[in-house]
Image (tube, rainbow, N blue to C red):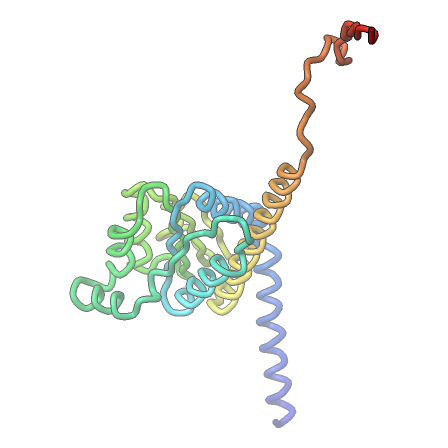
Length: 232
C-alpha cells in the first residue's frame, strides 16, 4: 500500500477510535445499570423480553438475546425469556408484504406481549417508523419500554421508560456502543443471579436454631432435680 494511502487509513482509524472513545466516555453508566435491573426484574416476575431493530440493530438485538438466554444463565436460577422479533424472516416479510413494513414489530407485540413485559428497541436514528410504531404499541398495551438510540431525543425516545442515548452521529460507533451496553447488561444480570444463588446456598446450609425454651436472659431454664429411688 502506498504511504499516502496508509497514512490516510491510519488517520481514518484514529478518527473512528477517537469518536468511539468519546461516545463511551459520555455513556450514562447509571442508565446501563438500570437497564440490567429491568432485565432482572423481568426475570424475577416471569415476564417476557422482546427486542427489535432494523439492519445492524436487528443483528445486535439477536446477539443480545443469545447472551441473555445463555451467557446470563446461572444453574439453579430460572432463565430469562427473551425473543428477537426480527429472527423469524418468514413472519417479518409476511407482515411487511401483506400489511405494512411499519407494522413488522407492532403486529408481533400485539400478538405476543402482555402487560408488564419488557420491550427493548434499538435504533441509531430513533425515528424508524416501525420502531416508533412498536414503541407506541408497547405504551398502549402496558409494556415497559427501553430505547437504545443515537444522539436524539425524538422518535421512540420520548415513549421510553428508559432511554440510553449514544452521543455520536456515526452509525458504526452507535452500534458499537449499543453492543457494549448489551454485553454489559448481560454480565451484570449474570453477576446478580450468581449473588442470589450464593445467598440461597448459604441459607440452605445454615444450622437449625435451638428451639428449646429460653429464659428472658437467654439462658436455658433450670430444671428440678429428679429423685431416683435407691434400689431396695
